Image (cartoon, rainbow, N blue to C red; front, side, top):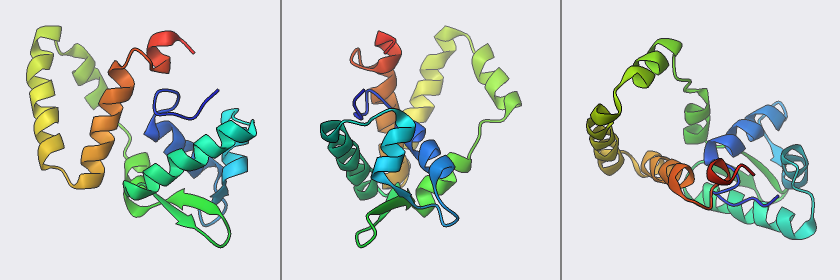
Length: 139
């Protein structure tokens, strides 16, 4: 198993970091990799690179002395935001034809959102629509 965007959503990784982190939220790359089933050295390095990208996007923090990762303030807010059951039912009930307007709203939010949120929205769309993604290939 690799650690690319097409293997794990950013949210999957952030939720795993939230679950695996110590009292202050910190987790080592190797422990994170183990919990995800990523254990080969080459793939472990790939996970570190992926986390580095997520740090540059504002989702993670890195302690360079201890070599530990944790959620940033933005990453924490995203992982804590759970879609309420009522809202989920409403979205599922929207007819396919009406989803065009929903997508127009999402893309407007993407354009006007802060850069962190814009990146998360863009990458979630990439994950969900790419034929290379695990959701399409059943990996």
